[in-house]
Amino acid sequence: EAGVTQFPSHSVIEKGQTVTLRCDPISGHDNLYWYRRVMGKEIKFLLHFVKESKQDESGMPNNRFLAERTGGTYSTLKVQPAELEDSGVYFCASSQDSGQGEQFFGPGTRLTVL
Amino acid sequence: RKEVEQDPGPFNVPEGATVAFNCTYSNSASQSFFWYRQDCRKEPKLLMSVYSSGNEDGRFTAQLNRASQYISLLIRDSKLSDSATYLCVVDSNSGYALNFGKGTSLLVTP
Image (cartoon, rainbow over all chains, first blue to last red; front, side, top):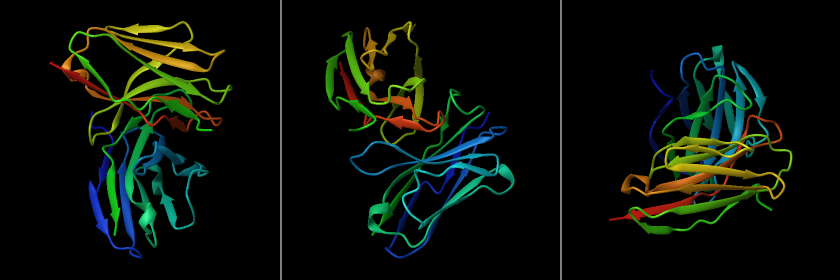
């Protein structure tokens, strides 16, 4: 069974540009999560989808970040315009059940904003 | 105060040694507790869930003390392949978002 996949694996952009990250969850997983790790910090929750609905986006840093999950399958996370402090590794995870269900993580997208 | 605190290490131990990691969490209402393992530049992977009664999986033993809000992981007979960062993870108030510690780095040497 294929795991969670993310694209691209790396992205280097300049401040002010736009970047879109993509996540394909494990097939059949209704729950999709975005997390971020900035250098020197712990992994932090950004938001949670159940199918196509945003269940909780309390972790989103600001309105430069927009996440979508049209059709309840893959998800995109757009950063526009990117700032230096947005650099980090963006992980996507999916789970069959929310709550205590195991979350399976993708390999992450390493974003560098110059 | 951080949600989850861990000693960052690094812990350098010889093969065959026993090593213990500790973690504290701040939210007394948390219900789910985990240890994740993360290899360098890879994604976190679930190592084991942690239950109040304590649980064991081969060389790995996890313990939870709810009164002290303290979680531990014991690794016996360390292998070179155990070298990784071990993340203490606790659920949030919402029950689905996970709160991560910064991780404890382990290096097992020959």
